[in-house]
Length: 143
Image 1 (cartoon, rainbow, N blue to C red):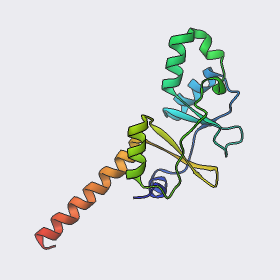
Image 2 (spheres, rainbow, N blue to C red; image 1 turned 120 degrees about the vertical axis):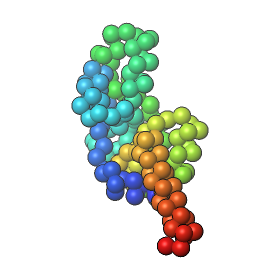
Image 3 (cartoon, helix red, strand yellow; image 1 turned 135 degrees about the vertical axis):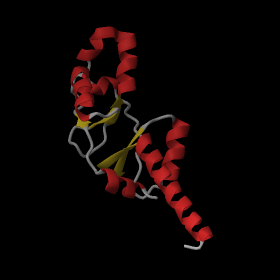
Image 4 (tube, rainbow, N blue to C red; image 1 turned 60 degrees about the vertical axis):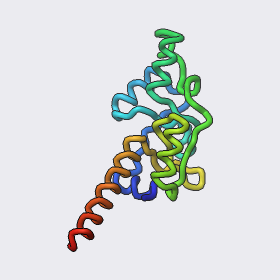
């Protein structure tokens, strides 16, 4: 299964935040969108970075309440791993597991077109396995 199929099922909406947004605004946006990470983008098209709940929690542990006045650019991961819509869920699942990240922006020609989480990837893989199991059972049963 391709990442483009995952996006067709879940949609292309991506919650983004400007690099100069305060961490207080980032936390509010994470909560409003019900997501674990936001793509940091000045224009909503280019991926400048990514910031996750984990980034915020780690900064709070080091900097305390002063963290909330910092900006997304201060805490974001700027070397973001992205994938193309033609990547497979198996490829992405392996990379996400090995590199220990949970959110991957999807880009096409360097333009943000979606985002997938490890949950999206695992759900897609489970659906594939259920379909394969059903097909094999039907084949063996003569249906």
